[in-house]
Length: 284
Image (cartoon, rainbow, N blue to C red; front, side, top):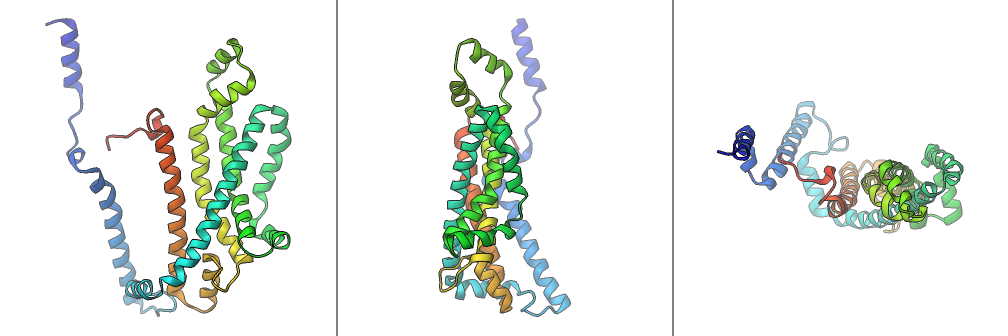
């Protein structure tokens, strides 16, 4: 037996034994735990209502929610579509402006020193306080809600992108410099691809933030007459003590957030799935 064969045999013997869970389908390992947790939560929900005799206008039972979904789903679907459009537009606007501003700040240090303090200042402004200004400028409705959604989602995209642009390996930067590559080439072909994980992290945060911004905008500038979003439905349902509709609107907002988050995760797997450690498949 050669030295190579001995080393190969030792390496094979040193490999850990496969876990019994490794043979299960991925779908079962992914779906069963949250499904089981959902069943337990629904059972606890019903148990609390029965044990403490809670009236329906304070906390509707699971059966009441099912009945509401079956008979009044149309009253939620249209507002959900309105909020989805506002959230998507705000998310896209925040993504474009956030990445573009980070590229400018990453290219010119003077621009970073000039603009970054105002980006932080923008993040510190309470969105509820500034939303009425958008109503004055743009009027109530989709334009205002979209701008509020973009405003609240902008900072995580810009901050994460800038951090990614500044975190590229210095050895590679020196290599590009020694090769005579101009700064714009380094930015577009070295720093920007290297910053993709941080950009996508910022977009994941922005996905949920844009929905929050859209609903906050609807709280302030929502319109009725069938054109309002989930924020308007939540406000109206709370005033009228229509608790099942309120729960359903909150559930609709969660669905919108999950849809946007799923789009970002899909893009992450497409762009990083074959080379970055964070997106590579794991054994568990």
